[in-house]
Length: 376
Image (cartoon, rainbow, N blue to C red; front, top):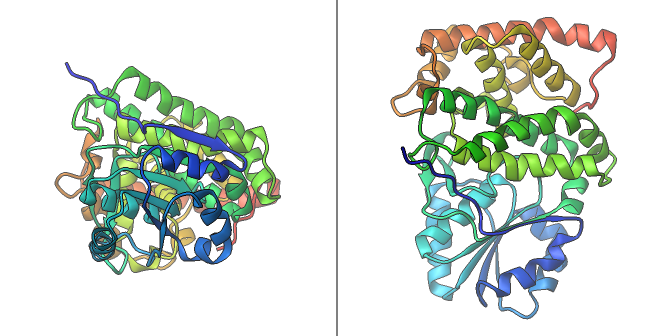
């Protein structure tokens, strides 16, 4: 039996950590191509260029989609400019694109997330979409990022919806890793996970339950607290290590199925993963106490609990089967579940989760109201 876990080379987190970017970059190269989300470039250009003053950076605006077209465009720039380092700054798709370009160009990469909305930063994986936003493939990379640098001051300044979406993504980590552990299914390396990976996945879930609500409160106020630091680490490091070295299963496969519907494209990855988690509770026969815990958490922090919450308020039976068939496609991670899997069962689970969410939402609103209101 061979078990394998993989990790980023270095993880740096804390308030004002962006000031360390130059020091971290100098360890790896002198001429970085810096891929930046448009909003970050327009609002933080000085904060980015100042720590890189002793290097010769080339700043390039990300076009918004991690597609093969965008990867090829940036690879051409990297080749022409003879860069020796890629730095990706922004959200999950910008980071995934930076990782893919660095792999194709055979140079190191530094990842600087400006929001804690996914577990993408630490992984040796890029999720590639079509130019119009449909899931296309997982690009498995040979190495994790050399450095992941997380400035929690930036995270706290971002709208709370991003942090909450990251919790939705992280919420799947333990459920999927546990399914892989029971099934003895492969993680993202193609081998069994280690006990370290499964333990980190469980710690991710416990951290969300313990600190998620008060971390969302802190983020809504734009302040940094220990709870916020804990949840940023859970969203970014623990979830990244847990999914990659523990494994994926139903939650992310259902997310991938949901992307087949254009109505969902306005919603964040973690928001759709949260629906995958809720459907997975019914698909995998979780006990009622766990169902209560997860639904209560989602309602408290403002994660979606119904299909209408991700744009599918008038979803048809045909659409549900399109989602389910994509989720159950050959090679999809849903087949890592130690349960009977079929498109019909996924449709049943989606309907059950949606009905339960619709039942609970008015009850929650009458009793205490959502802990954090997340605007669409």
